[in-house]
Image 1 (cartoon, chains in turn yellow, purple):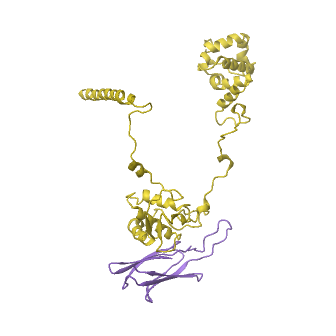
Image 2 (cartoon, each protein chain N blue to C red):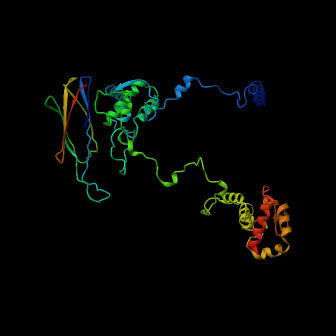
Image 3 (cartoon, one colour):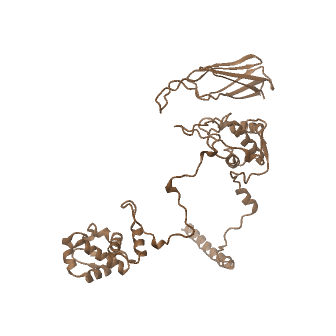
Length: 313
Length: 100
């Protein structure tokens, strides 16, 4: 009990403290400022902003040679990636596999698959070694990048020195293996000027029965000035009435079953609409007001009743 | 063929990756349904100052791109190793590597 009170008391104090905090700081600042957080410092942004783009944007000043890279690779990378980048066990292979992309078992490596060398620099710098990511210096990263390219025979010279200045000269073998998907249904260009008037766009066909399309039919009906009342009534019916009137749930007269409707229709449209609007409880069952959907407009409701009557005559 | 040779406690440690398809001759091409002709390394020899320090006889059971590691005594940093493989079609490949 005591603990509970203590806990509760703390919560109360917190709430009051929070209210005081909001009152004192938030309303004093410009609108939209909630008194939370602070602006990131430049050092913090620099710590996050480490991506390297295909054109080399983002590369820091530095350099490293293939032979330097070999030493670092043997010490820190070869245990998983293998002495020649062939991959130990199930660890990723870094080299080889050129020409296998169309085979049953494509071997995706830096040399066979990757389109840009910048990804290599970025990835090594960001995520490697696996046990100590971001522990490599910029120069070490340049050296390792050069060495992995050497393992892939993209660089042949063992004395090659990779730096920011000659980075753009590296061409990856699979550079042209990537292209923009040209299947028709993936191109969806947003219209920015001289666009079609949305009110004149009509839904001309739709595959029925897979996804709910009532909202589309409704929108089309709403935007068109001459509303086809039968169609509108059908839309409303399917959305708000069909659940009971299709199956006879709660004693609802099934639409299309003439026997159930003859007497009801004989009572006149006015009474039917009135019962539908305000609800009605009879011998057969119970009709909730507006079919349980209070947002229905009167016109929609009338259209639905007319539709149901027309289907049940 | 890629070679790494290093001095370690008086021994020369050599690691070799031979780039070779190592076809057994028993695999079928799925599209043409014909056998892919055998092509595999039969012999790999490493020489140090014209003396054979390592010799391996490979068969069909060796995997694609075979990796071999061995060590020997008597080498020194800066010496040159020459490695050669010969496959069953008679194709051969020779490389030289400097002990580091």
